[in-house]
Image: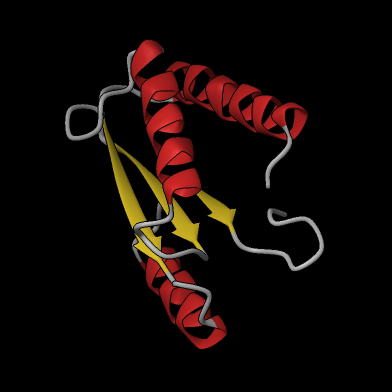
Length: 108
């Protein structure tokens, strides 16, 4: 399971990215690639995605308006993770986030 400190650190880093990006370029649509190693119906991950989306919205980044989030769910399948990672890279996002299971801690 992801620790509170790790989650806050992640959100803090991601929260700073839009401010830097906004200062660098005009009104073009930003792209965020999100590669998740879990199943789409995992309640913990749903909570994480919801919190991430809300944090971006609080900063003025609305999915479909000025940012597009490309979510990919691998369901723990390492081959699928590789395929989805290549797909996201081909989409040329501004940033790619990854959240994959780790046997020792649950999140890494």
